[in-house]
Image 1 (cartoon, rainbow, N blue to C red):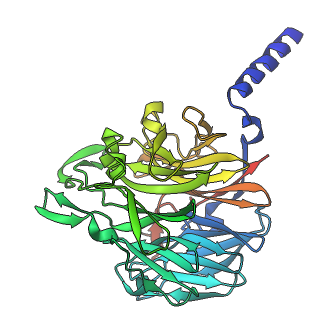
Image 2 (cartoon, rainbow, N blue to C red):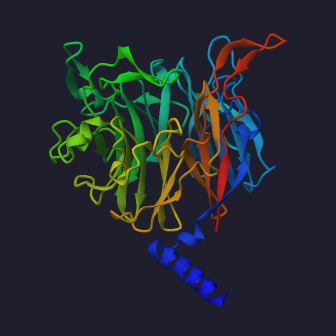
Image 3 (cartoon, one colour):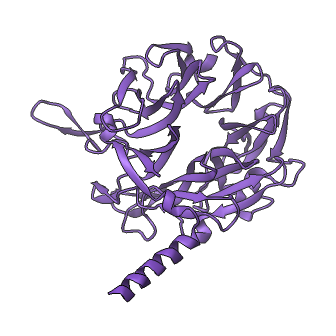
Length: 450
């Protein structure tokens, strides 16, 4: 018996020695479930700490965006402080980004098909719209990032074209006439026979070594066969056209004059989506996460071939791939959705979805590294936290298929999940109400136990 116990203890020590520090971050507990009581809150879309409370913005297509907060993050302590009630003209569908500006104001970027909005609060309860109708361009249906740089607050917007806006007071916004413009990169689309703007929106902004970095997105137009998820068969008549290009990275010292450091014809040999450093780079359509960790800038890609990767740079010009999920056999990690530095470790949240019968589909994952170096990342969460699944249209899939946001409160790390989107289906009950797909799901909030 004693020999067995000694062998077990030795085995545990060996496992822990392979990943230093894993024992301090391997347990998680759920602190909010079923969309804070409303299962149509499908995504915990954003998180921020403001005046000693943790705020979470949701995606709710059916009932309008919501914002919830808690002073401790514990179960039963969450309260709703904002709800965008749906209306006949427009509704804010989701709070895609939350930004605390020096703890003086909390800003919320709301996605809206009639033009994205920016809301602001001083106390976390009373919200005022401070940016309307896509900041003057109703085609700007999404504002994915907000950041203070110098004397201005910058907003990265777009949909059909990347656009940068800024404000000195958070109320009056102007379009920055960037030099050169983000629309200066044009690529030839063989499907239409015309040259088209490569950059459709600004997806990420980050300050690194006293410069503002803006990372653009491109349309994912790669030719691919659409999968009929109802029958699990490829369709023979639905195909998308050829992808014209991949993301670019720009930087500026004043917000007006910009230098392209990754992109078409950049002077550093990176190419669009790092295509000159990586043959599969043209499939890197977007960057979904960025963070500064240990004095280096990290970005995470979405790759339409499933070859999602993490890159880093010490100076903004020379980039190295530090993690490629495809090389690890993790081909269903389509997005590196969020990254955060916590307790001197780099945490990576992914989107991992598909039918669970497909090899490799496990649900949302969280990867961690103590250094950010190649070969040092290990999987902390690999099954959507609890391994639970849902079944829709005879397809069984992970319940929590993505880690959509991270936040820190009271020296504790929190993660918010993404679940299946709730949509009306043509079925009615006795009260003539529309049945909602995914009505028993809803996003979840989990906290890490030290």
